[in-house]
Image (cartoon, rainbow, N blue to C red; front, side):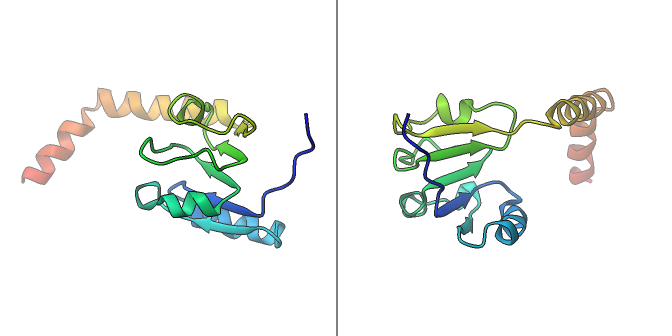
Length: 127
């Protein structure tokens, strides 16, 4: 496998992409970092980027120009199953504190379900 050339332009599509970009700018001053909400992402954004960091993809865009995609979640199926990437594209995912985050997420969803929070929110909005 050929050596990996670090990306020069990275697109961050997470909801907190600008905060992530601020941290990365301090550590990677030679990399252009662009935060864009996934809903606002354009084909032009993807065409200018070498790499993307995000949690979800969009099937209405062409992702084949990227050399690297990093999924900020535990899995990578939003990129490896939902969209077509270049055959040479590298795919990575977040590792580390994911078990704790997943446990917290499951506990929060269970509490929301058992406390009927969606129904409570609907009733509150209805007055």
